[in-house]
Length: 210
Image (cartoon, rainbow, N blue to C red; front, side):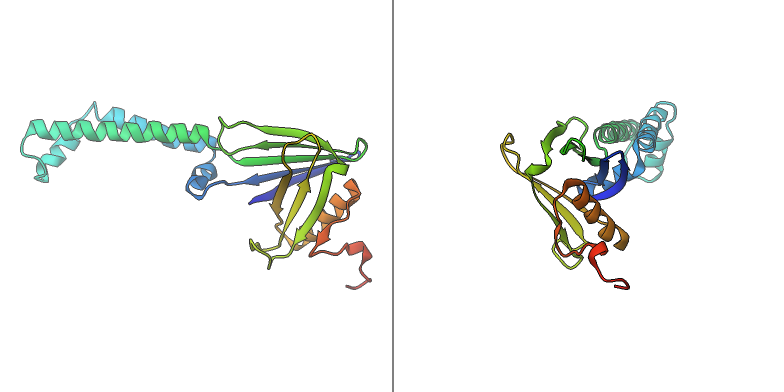
């Protein structure tokens, strides 16, 4: 699930930047970052190139008794070299092709419009971008931490059904603190004029001391 990474409000515009790590198998690549991931990949290629400058791996195979002769040892070294190089190239392509999943929601109160831009985790995938009026927002619903899928501080769903779209869209993001649970649904409601529903109460409507 996407999580709230940053927000900005200025002159009637409220922007939410949401990020996700994507599939579990690719999260460690994203966590490295593009620069470190490519350096890590390059280290494999450099290591493979060093195999052309030494016969130490072949001598090691001979010493361990894993091969019968020098020719077989050098063949094993060549296999290892190309395997390491292939790992480096594969990791380089993965580092280039995988990034943070990102969704930007821009609420323009003056124009009464919502603009969204969704960038998938894979660099070559198509970016989904569009715009609609606030009247297309069907619901802003808040879910408590106990609701499925369980999150530490709950999550928010925004359902949109614009007449020009083929299918409705649901944007979902988890909250990262109790303060966010109080603040962001309230801000969304005030900007869009759509009262949030679900496991939430406007803090301004609660009695003092609650």
